[in-house]
Image 1 (tube, helix red, strand yellow):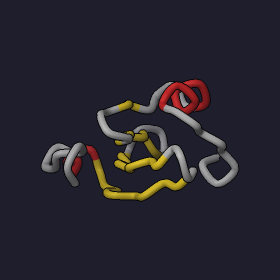
Image 2: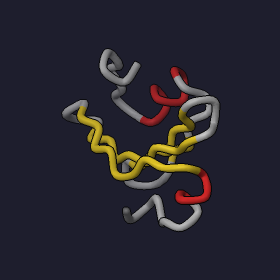
Image 3: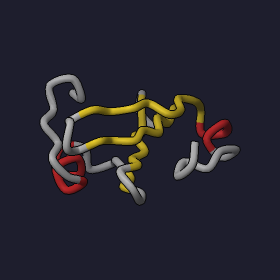
Image 4: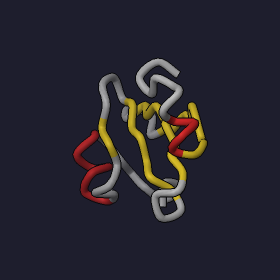
Length: 69
């Protein structure tokens, strides 16, 4: 989905993926594989670029700060 998405702002992400958690400064957390994993990303909305910052299980996600990773 992200490959073909044209997200100009956080509202566009939420429209397409209701389970996404919108954080500050372009950060977003996605639930993956039926909520088994989490993907933390930073999105540059101006350039339509997604930087994957973390992929891991929920237990691993609990050990990071998604806002700064």
